[in-house]
Length: 571
Image 1: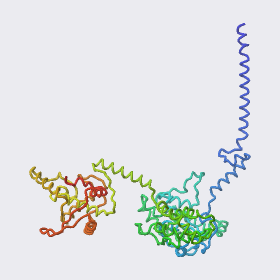
Image 2: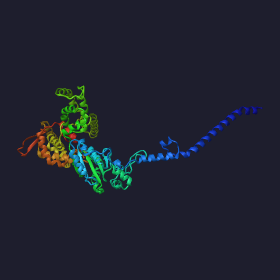
Image 3: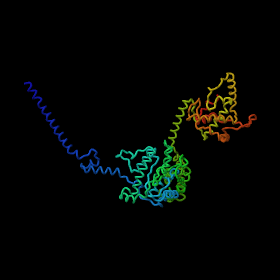
Image 4: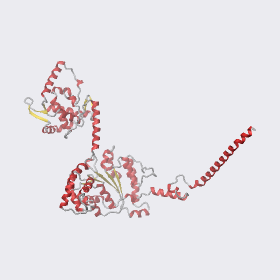
C-alpha cells in the first residue's frame, strides 16, 4: 500500500522530465538538419560583402575576385606624378626666381629615353628643391621613385621602400603590411634592385602585351626610371653611413643600367660629405625680390599686401629667408595690419599706410623674438637640467667642485689649455713643476727616486708660501710651453673625456698638435688682457708673462675642458 502511494507521487515528475527530454531532442535534430543544408553554401573565409548578400558560390567567387583586384590595383601609371601635365611656362611661373635652376635640371635630365649623369641638388631649407624636382617630372610625365630619408631612417626601410615602389607593391591588411622583399644588406639590395628594374623596364618597353603598351603610351613618357633620394644628408647620422653613402653615390656605376637616373637632394653642400657626391646643382637662397613675388601671388588686394611687405620683409629677411618660417610669421601679422580697416578691398593711401604702420609697429619686434626662437625654451631648459645633473654626478664620483662652468665668451680649445697653463705657471712655484707633471703629462708623485728630507720640504713650503703671498708671479715662455705640452699631451692617454689614469683626468679636446699656433693664441690672450706681458729679464734675456685671470675664471675654463685644476694648484 505504501509503495503504490510512492509510485503515484513520483509518476508526474517522471512524465514531465520525459517530455522535456523529447522536446530538446527534437529541437537539436532540427538545428542539425538546417546546418547541413546551409554549410555547402558558405565558405569559412567569407568576406563581409559576400555574407551580406544571398549565400551562394557565385557571389563568393565574385567577392574574392574583387578583393584580389583591389590588392593588385597598382600599375606603372602610379609611378608618374598625378594630375594633368603642366607646361614649361606654367612651371617657371610657379617658382619665381628659379628659372635658371629649372632649365638647368631639364637640360641635365635630357631628352626622352636619353641617359643622364647622377645629380646632387643642394641648397638651404625651403628653397624649393624637392617641389621643383617633382613638378619637373609632372611636366615631363616620366616615371620616378621617391624616397625621403626622414621617413626611411635606416638602410632596411630605405631599400624596401624603393623595392616596394618598383614592384608596384602596396602594404595593406591583406598582406599583413609587409614589404614585397626583405632587404638589409647593400649586396642583397643590388641584386633585388637590378631584378625589379629589369622587370619594370621590360614593361615600359611593351613586353607585357599590346593592351598594356597602348595604355602606357597615352600616359607614361619614355622608357627610363628615376630614383629620387630626398634629405640624403641624414644618412650621415646612420650607423653604417661610411658604407651606405658611397654605395648610394656609386649606385649608377654599380648597376650599369643607362635607363636608370639618380637624383640626390640635400640641405648641405657637397663639402660636408666624406665621399664625393655626383654632379652638383645649387639652389641659392631667395632674394628679397623673389620673396616679394612669391608672397604677392594669389593675393586679393595687391596694393594692400605690397604696403604690408614694405614694412616687414626687410627686417624679417635679415633673420631668415625660408618661405615656411616667413609665411608663419606674415599670416598673423597681416591680420593685425588689417585690423583698423573696415574693408579689405580698400586701396591704401599715404595717410592710411601711416596709420596701419603705427598700429603694426609694436607687433613686429614681438614676432621677431617669438617666431624664430628655435629650439623652444622648455627644450633648452630640459637639456640644461640634464647636462647639469650629469655634471654633478660625475663631480661627486671624482671629488670635483661643480659650480657654474658657463663662460660668457667663446674661446678655442687651444686657448683654454694655454690659459690654464699660464694660470698654473703664475700661481705655482717653478720648483714644483717636476713633482706635479711627469713626462706623460700625468701626476705621479709615487715614482720619485728618492725621498726628500723633512727639512728640505719645510724650506720648499716656506718659499712657496712666500711666493703665494706676493701674488701671481711671472714666468718665461719656455715654462709656459712645457706646462702646455704636459696638459695637451694627456689627451693621448685618455680614450674619452673623463678617464682616470695615474691620478690624472684627460683634457677633453686638447691635442699635442696644437703647438703650431701657440704663439698666435698667446698673442690673442695678451691682447684680451688674460695674460700680461712684462719686461725682459736681464739674466735670462727673454720676455716674462703673468696670468691676470681670477681663480674662479680659471676653474670655469678648466671645467669646460674637464680638467681637475684644483689638483695642480699649490695650497
